Image (cartoon, rainbow over all chains, first blue to last red; front, top):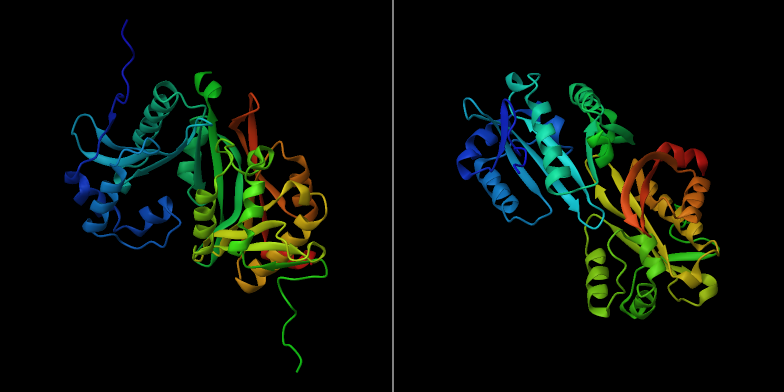
Length: 182
Length: 185
């Protein structure tokens, strides 16, 4: 029998990241908007050296974190990163994180496709029971996408972060194995 | 001389103090109790040995983003009854997490509620946090009841996030904001 293909979709595939990808990824981290969608840490541009060290840590292959590059199949260009991190094996749960680097690569369905591939990896390859993600309440396109993909909102950390003098919630979304299969 | 501020970290019944090396034997006793461990952590409930326990407590004491306290009831002659902490502090957004544990023989005596009140005063008025959150397992009804009574808000239910006792269980997220605590006090 043949198993269905993993990590490869119609337009994008999930790949390993290499040190050659560092200049491209570093360029995303010069954009404050990118950083404020992705992280609650202060939006501080990162150097290539910092990103190299980050990738070296990620590549230690801890079996708790699974980091992929999102690559366009046709051009082989790297457009983003996606990861399943903090896997709690005892309880078969993990956290999804995704970032599309450049504004012109968003709203094209590529992020949606990449999440689909990662969920297949999580439920069919790692045999997880639950995939969870957090999103800041001001990131409306992302929230719309997660709901379209069938994630359920578990709740919110109210007033979790402060940006531009205003406090915002961090929303928690999840998908369970049986919901993924349905 | 009159003091400028109200005393903190103590009330009529308990004091919150540093955790001392002499407390370790008591703390180890609780950490050999699997019922205690199963309410506290989602990692497998394996009884602790002294060395890793000491290392864990030492890491709490030296954590720059957390404040762990020994709970010392006045009617226990200085013996440690439990530990209460605000930890995981994010200074940028002024948020932190609350954790509390009591040895089984020290439960149901009101020490937990009293020590959380003192800790919240410390977190909101001394560390000046804006938000304190906590996680509690869905099967830990007495703890959930206590947090509700203290005024925490149910914020999220992580559905089927842990597997224990042969079934899936939820973990609840509860939170308190500074203005809510000030209104309660």
